Amino acid sequence: MKTQAPAGAAPAPVSADTPSPVSPAHNLRAQLVLTAAMALWGLNIPAVRVLAGRFDFTTLAAVRMFFTCCVFAALALRAGGRLPRMPRRHWPLLLACSMLMVYGNQVFFTSGMARTSATNSALIVALGPLVSSLLAAIAFRERLALPRLAGIALGLAGVAGVILHRPGAGVGAAGLGDLLVGASVLSFALGGVLVQRLARQLDVLSISLSIYLVGTALLMLHAALAGFDQRILSSGWQSWSLILFSGVLASAVGNLIWNRSIGILGISRTALFLNWVPLFAIAFAVAFLGEPFSWWLLFGFGCVVCGTWLGAMRRT
Image (tube, rainbow, N blue to C red):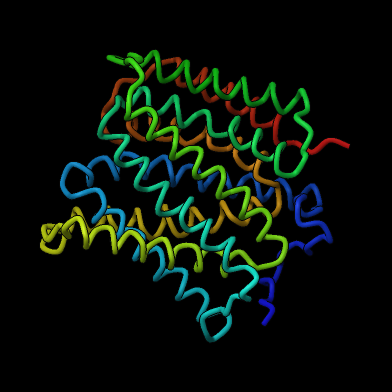
């Protein structure tokens, strides 16, 4: 059975490899909403760091993704009265997306963070737009135009300038942790390429629910085999408030916006906004955790704003 696109969604073009043609106003709204999602992901970083110091990373990831699935399921039931049924021809791509964007990304990133420095991790994650653009060029034969490459370079320079000039920052020697974080970036980018294909034929909510149902099941199985961390069940309201924020707002709302943006903007343009994540994380740390302010933060924001504009604007 063919799933129906949500009201207000852009019409799907004939080709499965190019983003939807949208009006400039719709394009701008999509970018503003995507920036808000990056703010949620930026705030999610310190939240997960706090939780990772309290619970086993696999158990934590499984519980967070469980609440994400609950949100997707509730939205699907409200929209259609039942859970969506996926045509069998899409099952292989949905399974691959689950393995890459949920299970693999969570396992690689969390285990890598435990083995490398925060500075190394942030710099590796900032390579996400470049990796995604290269994959899109290979998969969809997208031309790597000079403005897009300049936007990627400018955004990376801004992020690197902010991170490397923070107190105590330093780039350590590469090791297993850096490889794992790099694998998480590659895994997420590969999943995004597959989502761009699916978004031409399925609505975003159906894609997100299917991906996270399978990915969460894999994480639950992993947590059960590794030994479920029972401490999470008896934790206080502070921990549960962070878990709910991470699972409901950052993961569910953030990923719905991310997948919808891929359908509108394409993976390479959407990925440019990943440069906002470490900057928002640092800004929130300055605002709410009392970390020292640096003028490099304004430099970084300026570079990312200009880089995003260069790389994300459509040109005729």
